[in-house]
Length: 597
Image (tube, rainbow, N blue to C red):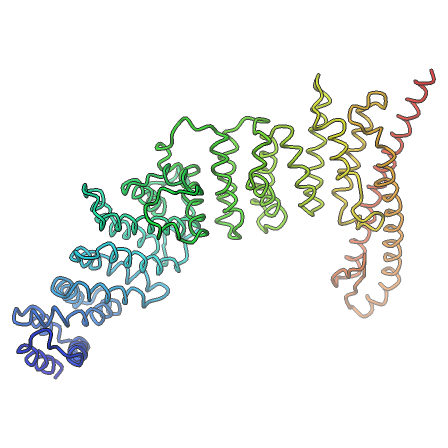
């Protein structure tokens, strides 16, 4: 029945010129063809398509059968004997139908699916799509751009495999699609390379390929993880994809040194204003991804000029590192840590000039490291970030270290980070005091200005000593070191001149704060012990308010442990404070005796 219906439609259309085909003819042809497939009349449908008499009809209407044929290929079992006929039919339709209509029909089919079906349909249709575009001689650049944009949009929603196992299993088919997409794009890249006349259409095609390369650098390559170069790097599909994309850039006249060293300049080397207006955020992500691939993964690094200094390369990459560290995905900001490490390891200690800190990214990057150190839930990345901050400090010259310390003390708002900075200040003072010529940044007036940020309590005696305990202990240890190392008569650090201010701003408020805090916690311990019997009888949880905030509900014995731990911290601070005051007294007394004698 379906075959007769289709033949009837064809017989009616055979006597018409193609411009006389009506819209209802197209619809009836599609419905009848669909029914032929549904009822299994594949041989008869193939005969109709191959019949030379139907050539004009198939050219104009046949593209409507692409969708039904593709759905049969997707839904039918791979062992089904009919599959070879479906493939034969697909090939015939691609060969015979109007390429412009086919292009739109294929792209609509690619846009339809979701989930794991995305990769299935892309892998199925990439070859037909390539064939159709190569048949289009007018507006080829537009067609290539439309196809690549559609393909990228679908691939960008697929999850990027993270581990070696995920890359190997490739559940969503992203790795297979990336490899197939390279093969799809190669002929168009070769077309650009072979054009010696630099025609306008060729320049447009080059522009579309450039956009595709940049989109690919952002997704999937920005979040992609790569296998260790020593282990199976040759079998890493995402690394292969990255290498080919960077190769495409060179092939179309935009080698990566030209691309990345011109990014951020007012006049870029791209030829088309349309590309210049691409969203800055996307371009920044793409450039950061490219920098990581070249400098950390070593892809095409041999194209890089050997004359570039390590400090220049760090300056160039710092903006990209900033882009990475601003992201929240572990797979992305971890690349920022790797790229920073790569740049810093090229530079000698104490050689990075302080003038670099006038560049915004040279201050925002260490602030980004602090965020990872304090907020990231993954311990290995917190430790890596801490190590990178220390490495960065080590590379700066003395004035650079001084400037960075001031910045981080003012912005970190984290007791542990501040303690880390104070320990670094102590180390720099120690180095300075051991030199023949004092370092002006860590002695005298400059140091006193820095100590004003260290030897004080943010809220005086009301400061939360428990929350600030790391910072307070580091400050006391620094003060103890200064009292021991710097004699009052020498006063290299300027400490003894400022001792009165330090006592008023730091030591006295700390005494008062310790007394208040200890009294409060001792009262809470007493209350907790008095109530513990009742709580044990009722087997309820209890809560305790400390410093205006309620400790979460927990068993009484656990709360007592927390309270005693706080008291222990206060005792520790008090013992160091007492030792500092004892040393000050001994030093001043000794100096007075020397002066009298």
